[in-house]
Structures are given as C-alpha cells and as structure tokens.
Length: 184
Image (tube, rainbow, N blue to C red; front, side):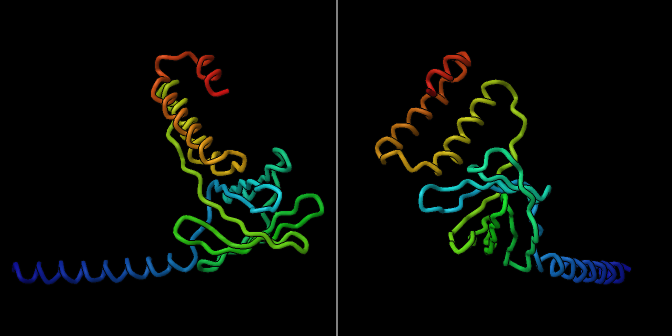
C-alpha cells in the first residue's frame, strides 16, 4: 500500500514538474515590459533624461517639460526591444537589448544615432513618517539624480555625497525648513 502511494506521489510530482517546465518555457519567450523605467539618451550637449511608463504607454523627456508622449510601436521579441516616441514632428526610434534589469541600445533621432539606457524605477513603500520620507528623497538624489550630473568635479561630487550622508543621519533632529536650507 505504501509503495502504491509513493508511486502515485512520484507520478503527480513528475507531471507537475513537466507542466511547470512548459509554463516556464512559454514565459521565457519575451519578457513583458511594464512599470516605470528611467534612463538617459546620451546627447552630445547634455544627457536627456527619459522616463518611460510601459504600463501606460507614455514617456517624458526632460528637455520637453512634463508633457507625456505616447510610446508607439512597442515590440519586445526575446531580448530585442523596440519602440518609438514622437515629440512634435521629431521621431525618436529606440532599439535596444534587455539584459537583466536594463535596456541598452541606440536611438535614432533624424540622422543622428545616440546611445541610451533605461532601468526600472524601484517601487518604494509608503513612508512610515516624515523621517522615512526624507530618507527616501535623499536616497533618490544619490541613486538616481546625481548620475545625470556633468558639472561636479570628482572632489565636489564626493563632498556632495558626504554632505547628504551626514544630513540623512540627522533628519530626525531637524525641521523640514532646516533640511531644505542644508540642501541648498
């Protein structure tokens, strides 16, 4: 009797394993792009920050203000990603490869071909209190925004990062106004 139960259990597990492999194989064809991503188009004069929300099919370029532009012709076959954004009369045609959690490739703007990269933005939990909110904001400055800067010297960048780290440690003892003054 025990042998029969063990045999049936093995068959059930084997079937479940085969079914799981088929589902996994089907899911590896093309990853679904969703959520908010952010990155840079490496333009010669200055980097253009690109925010793309693949869930809502919208994108924003920092050079165009806060106007949302529609993501068109989205195609992701395997690791190959393609999409287009039209800003006014100018088409931005993106072609890249998805590697782990990053898209890197080229964007054609008229006759110009520029490199770009995008990474998914982290989904942060709601802050527990004002200290947690300030710490999330300062972490964003250090992890997202400082990488776009081209004006800091290496020494100035280190001094800025060190100053933010000190400020981050003292948030609980400062008012919002004091924090804003220290940021300026």
